[in-house]
Image (cartoon, rainbow, N blue to C red):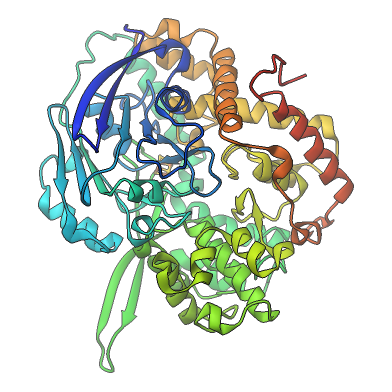
Length: 588
Ligand code: SF4
């Protein structure tokens, strides 16, 4: 087996492309590891995220296309949200399309001379002028692209941005195959800065598995483990929306800009059970996944005095429902779907958009903002004005307020005041008012995401405030997740893809050398991505914990500030060990 990654590099400025063989596949594995290696090679570490030569780096893993739930693509880029190296992960069909197009990595640099669509297959790279799509929303863009490119629909993936990406809103997202996203930290804005409206990847090749006699047996074992585990029940039935009722009952669900952590009177209106009973149309799945956790609801809107209805299919999940539901005090499932559709149409990250609007609502309530700034009467629980505000966020030329809010709640709060109640931990929070461990893990996590460490679950299981126990959990979790995200496994399969099964899967494909010392390799990848963060300006000491989090009362009672501060300081020291130039073991 070759020790190189097959990577396609497309330069939009010159319109040229080339295939590269990047060494080190057995060491850097793929996903997070490959993205970091490619960003190190192509990234301009001290330049603006919108510099035309900044790369967008897409990376899949060695098991993509071979095993179930190896469904993610990692995108490495310079984030316009914080100006540093960032990763965003998305499912959909992209990972398989790249595999069947023959590439484990895709690097896009340069800026197209007019709004363009990049089309990639195993034997073609085309840059198509799509100037007529300027300003077009996500839905119209998708519909047009699908009608223009009918070939290879089964193995084809479509990435697109909406007005927010074109307008370089700092948390603009990239829509992947309609229901998945590169959501957080603004990759859509980077794509917009490249004049790139869309990317279509056609997986138009096949591959021969006859050289791997062990593969069918290992595949069957893993497939059985997936389908017989509680994954199916947990993620397929109600989906992640199941957590709404549970977290609300336990006092862990942020409501109305985190002024409450439970609302027993309102929760039934937006619970997973209500969505399933009243709105669920169907479940869908990323390519190669038998679980199918994507829940698609029916949005029905009356548009005339007679019985005239418009209907749309809108995906929902726990975090999006939190962001435009409980966080905005919206307690009606149909209204939540309406706002989710608005966010989707504009091409925004739903968590940042919802949480930023929650801050703006409280700021308006407190008189820090006036309606002259917000242009609409934002009020918790009232859906209509939020729809218009989301549209303004995607097209922020409206006024200075929306331009600033499009850079994040904290950016706006720094200008107008109200920093103490901006629910931002590195970026807008993800919906877990579970306690101190979650706060620290999102604030100091690599992606400022609940998925970096999974401390929201640790908070719920652990009542002892023992720093060394927490540190052991943080260290172990981060390393395990780096390994899974280098293999590009969906994290919902983290209990299935044990070290033993990952090793067996690699062996079955003849990747014996890659399968050696996986934990050590994960540590090296972990160190490399942190090194890139530091080199691009990350400073753990600069991440504030706004007062609102310190005032939080969860189901367990008031926050333990002493423990929070100790944990924050201890973890900062751990991260400092990754700062380039210091030859220190981060676990000591
Ligand atoms: S469990 Fe859900 S997110 Fe994960 S691969 Fe399957 S459909 Fe995609």
